[in-house]
Image 1 (cartoon, rainbow, N blue to C red):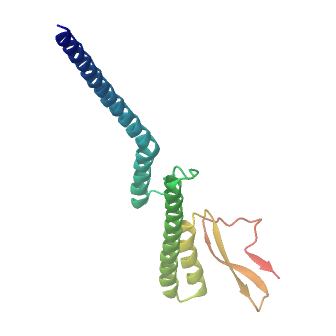
Image 2: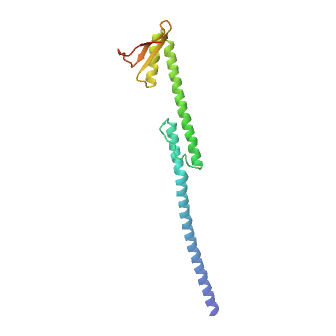
Image 3: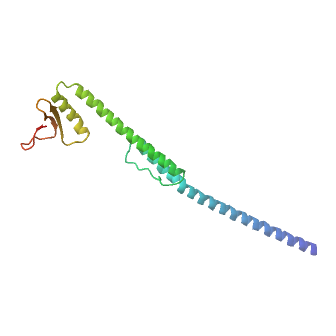
Length: 171
């Protein structure tokens, strides 16, 4: 009777509670998985993707690609700090490259002009070495002559003498 019915009702309540707990556990697990996926997507968007772009920029700079732009400089977080540091590295690298080019040019120029015997040869060698390197279309070399107190054209690069343009200027 009565005890068995009470016992049966208690078992039914227990089984219903176990089913509810099982369903709640499954729903909680699904919710946790969705939350984890959303957190991953957010972290990838906020951190992973910017780091990947910064790494690509670093590789381009390491390959001496001076046209590489440094992204994310305006971000106030660590990504922004890394980006600003990378920008400083790029600018220093570009300055160093320019310095090396100038040093090479000066070395070449020094070697070339030391071999010259006359002022005319010196002027010609200096213009032939410098003008193409600095992308000058025209270059002229005047020297001061104390006896005549004038500037005289000694050498030129890409310059064509014309009748109406003087090659000597009295001072």
